[in-house]
Length: 317
Image (cartoon, rainbow, N blue to C red; front, side, top):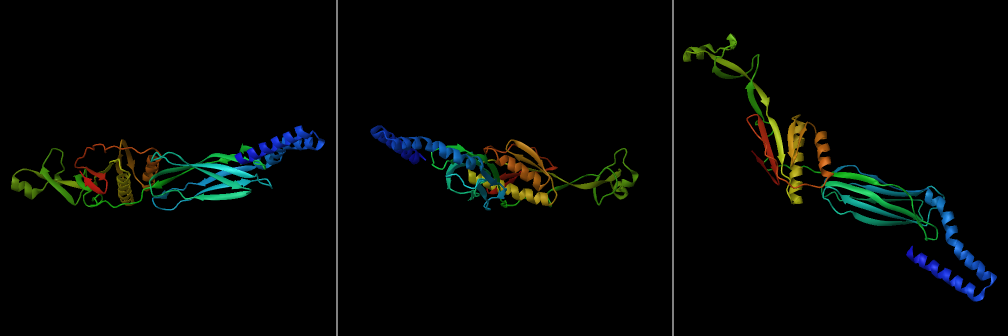
């Protein structure tokens, strides 16, 4: 566009010098023609410019290393398109807090044009694409006018699955404990001295006779422990990726067995009951600049199973 403007100014100055040198009717007409030529070009270009639109589409979430596509399309509703379009597209990974990467594009004399971007899905995060600017030029290429644009899409690159080594036993058999059953019978029992209010039919008569005091068989109920996953957020990206993918593996295994769990992720604590809840939480995390912090200490007891996830290995407290 700069070159065309320089050429027009040179031609305009030449016409003016020729008119002042000769002062003929023809040179006068040439000068007027050169003066009104940009206005005429702009007027006949306006319908095409006003009916032009730039749009960006896509943004379906993918797991890491899977392919994804973002489509940028430019179209004109007029039968003759503008001379060319200038589109600036900005790409940024919000989770990695990268500086926006700008790409400047040009489309010449096209009523419809589509360009496909393939985002980098090798790294976790929410990748945002948006049309920073969209302009169309008149037929002489002297004026640049903004056109309509709808340009903001985002896709989240979710963690794949990585099996912890060694893999913790979160489901069977270490995830269950025995607790006293308030009433009824159970195959599991615990022997203890008789307390006031105990039912007569719970007394173990043979042992009571042996120890010379009432001994009661208290029914025990096999219940599931509370499972807590606690996550470190390390500095190095490779370690962070390993932690996220181990977490995805364990979460998928627990949700497949319909086992709810508590997740301590940095400073956040959430309850997860399904893969959908886990995915929504991870998408929220990946849409903000990543944090670096150690996992919060979690109080454990006989009824709580705590699994601390570390890079490339698993340590259970």
